[in-house]
Amino acid sequence: MTIQTPLPEKRSRIIPEEIPLQIIFEDQYVIAINKKPGIVVHPGVGHTESTMIHALEDYRLKNKLPEIRLLHRLDKDTSGILLVSKDESTYGEFSKMFEERKFDKVYLALVLGTPKSEKGYIDAPIARSTVDRQKFAVSMDHHSRRALTAYKTIDYFDEASLLAVKIHTGRTHQIRVHLESIKHPVLGDSTYGNEKSLQKSQELSIKRQMLHAYQMSFIHPVTKKQCTIKAPLPYDFKKVLSEITNTKYKIPSFTFSEYDYHHKW
Image 1 (tube, rainbow, N blue to C red):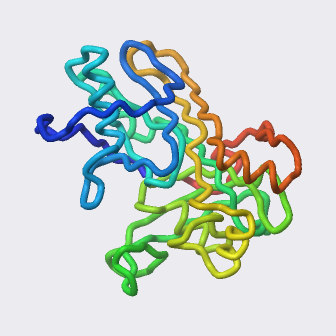
Image 2: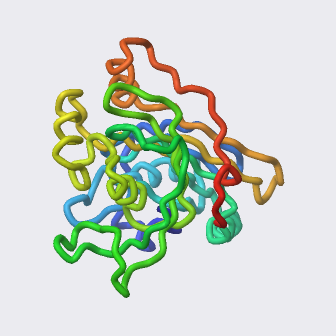
């Protein structure tokens, strides 16, 4: 999901916290952080401290930056790339690119089972669930919004597979909802998982959804250079994959283009 998210206007309410940041790309305009799982991006009810915003305020002060702004967000238990602008002008340029979908983002998802087709797309509208208002679901309700997800299977395991996933729309929980809708829920997803996926997750001692924002490619709006950023898998994700394969797991080399799909984005 992509939402432009500035730091709160009233900085006095944000107490900087020295939380280690794994910076995987940095220039004078932007930084890319490999977010650890379990960290909330924005303060909110029940999360008033130790968020990414608190960590970034600490980074801003230490680096004497007048402004620093998140360009998008990730769910608490989703790891991977978070892009942050260092000034107002850059924020505007990158925000426009996000709105025009000029970023190529690839997620990795460890899911239950293996899709029948190696690659495909899910074109199914999403709305807030009528059963549980904290959840979202594929729905034909008039309040639903179009959602389009593409996937490609890049590795196969016993009762699980590793998918590369792209989203063309940015609906809340889109990847998790769509993969559940085709009966291949993300392992470790306690919100959208089914009985079988939760049982498999328990067998593998998975504590959170196995979803990682792995790669982001774009033309830098200031330098005009092609940038491709990759975020290494966090320890827990690598550990699960290594246990499944009984090897020191390495992500297979793969290509993933929407042109692989006979579908108009």
